[in-house]
Structures are given as C-alpha cells and as structure tokens.
Length: 117
Image (cartoon, rainbow, N blue to C red; front, side, top):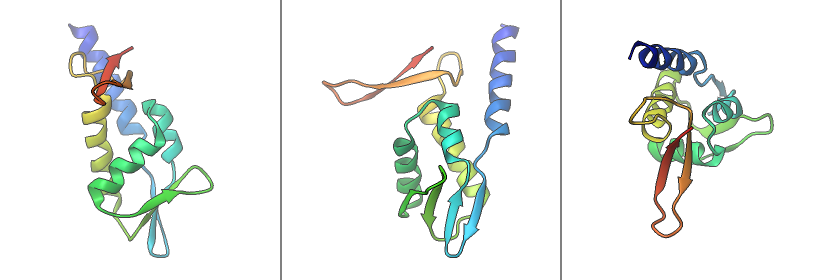
C-alpha cells in the first residue's frame, strides 16, 4: 500500500514539475513547452490543444518551435488549472492513479478508453 502511494506522490511531482510555461506575444498567449507536455503525458498534441481551445473558448494553433499560440492574453494559473484538469480527466488512471496510461478509441462506439501500462 505504501509503495503505491509513494509512486503516486512521485508522479504528482512529475506533473507539478512540468507545468505549462506561458509567455505573452503581443495580443496572443504562447505555451512554450507544449510539445514537452504532450510527450510527458503520451498524448496527441491535437487532442490537448482541442481540449484547451474548447474549455477556454478561444482560437489557437501550433507554432513553429513546438509551442502553441492562443488568441488573447491568458494568465498562467488559468492555463495550469486547465492542464491539471486535463490530466485528471484524460490521463490519470482511476484505479491506481498512475499517469502512465494509453488512450485508445473504440471504433464501434467512438468512446475513449484508458488503459494502464
């Protein structure tokens, strides 16, 4: 039991250690380490971008250096909160609380399934 809780604490530190880094560019907000976040979570970048765009109700696209540009000036804590919410909904296993999961789509029902690695 203690091993599982220690492992969950380590993974929580991993997520907290690599939060989105934002920067204002004119009237846009850039998430500088977006590609690093997607590889850390083992998720498709378009899925994470679509989630952020729909939750914030803004337009956004991929930049040249592996970043994302969002329309408008958005503060870092708001984007960090959305990132944590995404991890809880689409990454973290409900049984063991691990972030080492794989997301697959069932072709017949078109539902997303989480599978622990």
